[in-house]
Length: 194
Image 1 (spheres, one colour):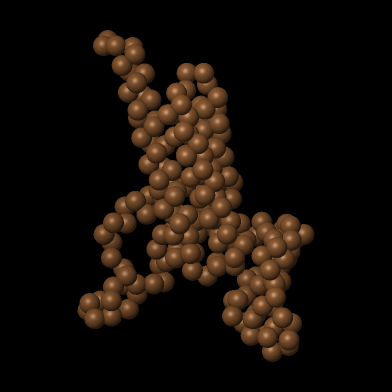
Image 2 (cartoon, rainbow, N blue to C red):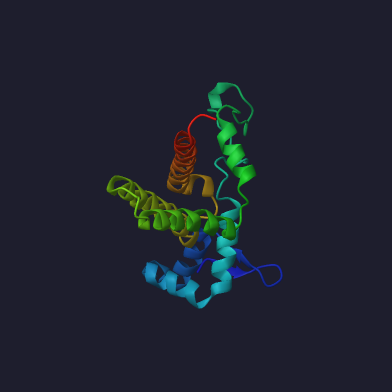
């Protein structure tokens, strides 16, 4: 659903509205397609699923669509003009994290793996173990948000549709950096002054 063959053997995406309009005019009953039908379709067509993942991953860390402006019409700016305030974080994530499905799998896999490894250590306190479970859940939530947007065929306005994904990834990165700095400081305290 929502895919047709494009240039070469790569599927090209077609806007959902045109699919629904054509299907409705031909009486195909697209409104009766369930979430399970869509999931089964992509399980049966893994190349199309991978194509969607690649396309979504390219935009996964782009918080602002360059084709849209950020000012109101009455603000006196030309159409499509964007504010540059608060873009340091957005631009650095876009530039530092490669937009590939493998990068996303590495990001979330390392978060889940680190949580599992650290929670199994004997020296891990119950309080820290609870925090690690929450961190693992946050990784799973971000990955699920990404997959829902990808499979939901909302590739046309990913900056808006991936809001929950962006928020959870920001929390994941903040927690990972904070935990790393705390571990470095704790190791320095154990060694004592030089």
